Each structure stands twice: as C-alpha cells, then as structure tokens.
Image (cartoon, rainbow, N blue to C red; front, side, top):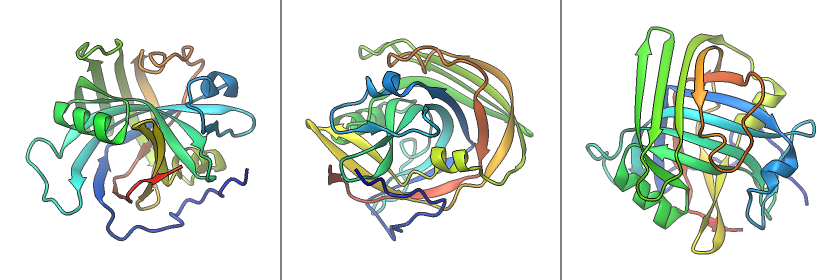
Length: 242
C-alpha cells in the first residue's frame, strides 16, 4: 500500500466543510507501543502506522469550542465543552494516514449520543474540569459509569514552556489531516483541515491516568513526550467510505 506523505500543512484545504471545531488549551502526551499490541485493537481495514518501528498512543485533554455544523450558529451549552481522548495512528485502505480514537470522554451527553450513534466515535459521558493558573494547566476527568461505560479517570497537570520547532516525530503525531470511524458496520474517513500546529514544550507536573489502559492496552511505560498546542480552528469534510 502507498502511504500518503505527512505534511505539517494540510495538503487538501477545506473551505467550509460540514462540521467545525475549535480546539483550545490542548495537551498531547505520547507513548510508544509495540505495533502488534495496537493492531489488535483495530478493526479490519486499518493498519497501525509506525515511526521507527513503534506504534504510538496519545492522551489528549483539551477544551472544545464552537462545535457543531458549519451552517448552524453556536449553540449555548452544547457547543463548548471539555474533552479527553485516547488516540492512535493508522493507515486506511486508501492510504490516508489518520487518527483512530480508542476513547473520547466528554461532559455533554447530547454530544456523546450524536457522535457515538451517527459518526461512530467511541464517546463516553464524563465529568471533567480544566483549570488554568498562568502557565500551569490542570485537567481532571472521571468517566461516568452510565451507560455501561468502563471505568476511567485522568488527572494531568502541566507547565507550559516556550514554542518549539516540531521534530519529525511531532509531525508524525500531530499532522493527521483526518480521522477514521466505524459507523453502521463500515469505515469512514473524515478529512479535517486546520492551521498548522504551534507546539510548546511542556513540563509534566502530575499524571494519574487509567484511560490509556481502559481500551485494552498495557499501562504506558516511561515519561511521555509532552506538548501543549496553541488553539486551532478545524473544519471537517463530509465522510467518505474506505
């Protein structure tokens, strides 16, 4: 299979799209895994993407703003919310190098229901807070056990440093211009466009997490690669079947 090259700038800009998201106060925590361990969690039709022979899984807490269809005004309560996701990196049958979500924890039950049933993302209803004190950012997430959700919690506290020049690995982990979801028994690629990431170095102050292991992975080993990102404004194209 020919993999599409990765680029720090979106290769296929989306002028309007059908969904919009603004991602604020976003932190990336990345750990390497053996490819076979991650491949075992993927559906047929997806191949784990690797860097220097390793698969990668990321814990990503952030604040979502202005979420919703591009033709609809921002909705009170529903459009702004905290979210924490666990994601890995895959290649689909068309060669798209995309994100595959292992879980997404969100505080808005209507968003959870919409994205889970219609788009196929593995959302869970959760309680979450995001606190900012100067350069210090603290995220706390606890998944609700209803409806039939596996237990998971996350507590992350970071200190934001200066902006950095992205490494080749940073580009591999963040320059993903689409996601893949499984909906109605089929895989769909959702192209996404946003500004190039501006990444900052991070000092990890506290980490207590069980969301990484909840989908069936082993606990991550060692210190993660940690980055904080300046806000971006994202647009999603209509999905295509892969």
